[in-house]
Each structure stands twice: as C-alpha cells, then as structure tokens.
Amino acid sequence: MDLNYGPEYDAFRQQVRAFIEAHRHLAPPSAARAARPSSEAVQWQKLLIENGYTARTIPAEYGGYGAEPDILKSRIISEEFSQAGVPGGLANQGISMLVPTLLELGTREQKQRWIEPTLKGEIVWCQGYSEPGAGSDLASLKTSARVEDGYFVINGQKIWTSTAKQADMIFCLVRTEPDAPKHRGISYLIFSMDTPGIEVRPLKTMTGHAEFNETVFTDVRVPVDQIVGARGQGWLVANATLGHERGMLGDPGALENRLQALIALMQEERIGQARAIDNPVLRDRLLALQAEVSAMKCNGMRILSNSLKGESGGMAKLIVKLQSCEIAHQISALAIDAMGEMGTLYHGSPREREAGAWQWNYMFQLGLIIGGGTAQIQKNIIAERGLGMPREPKLAKTSDAAKATADTARHKQGSA
Image (tube, rainbow, N blue to C red; front, side, top):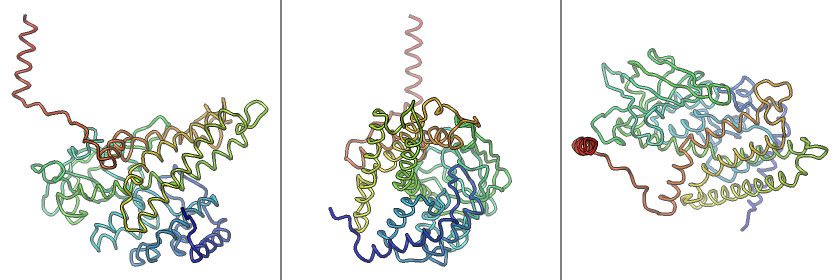
C-alpha cells in the first residue's frame, strides 16, 4: 500500500502548514456546543473560504472558493488542520447537510439565495425530520401540507429538532400527497422559523441543556416555490441529506482530535501518585482506542481511493457513522474514568475539568449514536446493503376483520 501523495501534494501540504502557522492566532476557540457561531468563528470562516481551506469546491458564484474538485487536496487540508489542533471551517446542519443537498438537487435560484449566507454563518438551519411516531421509520411521518392560494399550509409536529430555538430557517419533510404510498407522498420544504404558527418547545436532555426541541406547526403558510425537488419526491431529497449527515457524524479528523485531547488529559491527570496514562488498565483501553481510530483513518483512505477511481465506497462507507459515533463515545468514557472521582463532577462544580466538556460529550454522544439513523438501523443497512443478507422481516399488518375475529375468540375463551 502506497500512502504517499506525490510531489505536487507534498508542496500543497507545505502551503497549508504555512497558512496555519501564520494565522492560527486568529482561530476561534473550540465551541462545539454553540448553536450559533461567534463573531470570531464567522471571521475565521471567511478567511478560510478566501484561501480555499473550506467550501473549497463550492462555486464562487454561490460563495465558495471555486476550486476544481481534488479529493487529495481536501484530505490534506483536513489532516493538517487536525494535526495542528486548529479548527477548520464551520460544520453544522446548514453547511454540512443542506448546502451539498442544494448543490445536488436545488434550483439555481435556491443555490444563489441560500448557499452563500449559510456558508458564511449568517443563517443557522435546523432539520425537521423525526416525529413522535416517525423516527427510524421516517417515511411514516404525518406532518401534512395542503396547497391553498399559492402556499403550502403545514400542520403537524416534529421532535428532536436540534437548534430549533436558535435557527433562522428549517428544512422540513411534510406529507403533501396523503393518498400516495408513504415514500412517494413526501415533499422537502425550506422556510423561516419566524413564520407565524411555529411553536418551539425546548427538550432538556440528561446533559442539563436543551439541545433538542419539539416543534409544532399550526397552519404555517409557506410559498409553494420553497420546495427542493419535485412535489411528492422529498424522500429522494431527504436521503441525500441523510447521507451528508452521516458523513458529518463520521468525520475521522474529529475522532483524531478527540483522541489527541484524551492523550493530553491522561498525561496530566493523576491516579494516586502516578499519571493516568501510566495506569496499565487505562493505558490498555487507550491503546485499543488508538487502534480503532487508526483503523477508521485507514478506512477513510480506502473510501478516498474508491472515490479517486470513481467507485462506490461500498462496505467501507457504510460502517463510518456507526463506528465513528461509538468510538467517540468510548473516548469520552475513558476520559471520565481517567479523572477518577473528579470525573463525576459536572454542572458548574468549581473542581470540574474543562468546564465539564468531557462529561457533556459523553452524554450527548449517546444521542449521536441514535441520531442520523440508530446503531440498530445502521447494522441493518450494513447487513442488507453491504453483505447482501435477507431484509429484516416486517411485522404483518393485521386487518380490522382479523382483529375482530381474534377479539371474539379471546372473548369466548374468557367466557369458557
């Protein structure tokens, strides 16, 4: 296996390193919990776009840098920023999920209107997918939209809506064709969160913060042209967005950053008179996680090689979200154990480490294992699409007549 990129890319790597060294003092501090980017993060994003270190291949007319696609250069940028411990470009639901969806399936007017301000951090988006009765079986969603005087009139409810309280806009799945098969009756709408009739109810999680929300729509009116793709074809658009979401959640560079932070923590924390990293049990766990992260990095190289050949990522791509989210959670778990009794401190304790960031990540990452397709759903996808195994059997729907017959039989048994 030859992992050398070649002279052209070695020169580009040196260029990236020189930029980081000259500008790292302008980089904002990490703010993983911030729903809306700080002014420093917005300025950093602008600088990165201007130099082609984020939004690199997005056309300049839509606010990107406008470079020709080059997967190896994009990989080098990610590697160098990660190794330097300097934040790369903004990554959120708008930039990482909606923008690539619009580039693929949006109209020219939608691209011109929404992509640039989203890239610049001026617009924050949320995602309206899951419902109380439609999570893993997302196509069963009930939120409806009828057309009335040039508007979609939306009624229904979404749940687990991240950043809904802070968001300016939402991309939302609604049922516009109630008589069509469930996968064919869905449309993908985008609209302002300031539209009358939207109520956001924060949902506090075990982190103590309201990272999620319940969002209720009552006669919300959205212009009929604010639809991505054709009416009734939203399931295709939604799956494109889900693909980008799983890629965002499975970033190997983010795993590498967390692992390096864990190593630094274990070198500082002490258990008795020894450093945590010198404890044989904890060190074994760390070595296992290093191996897992290294394997995911090599898996990313395999996906990269397939992309360069114009081939599908196949099984390598299917495992990314499942493995990355579970490894990230294990990294946080080891960090908490390495802190000993201090690892239990959270929520403003004067002795908590790093403002409780490790504890917050440990709890929040459980949600990421569920979000974007649960671990169980991911395993089904791997088995069925990757390994070609038989599809998971579905429970047969019982007809009303069959239910009545069964009820009658139970009643007779009870009487007997």
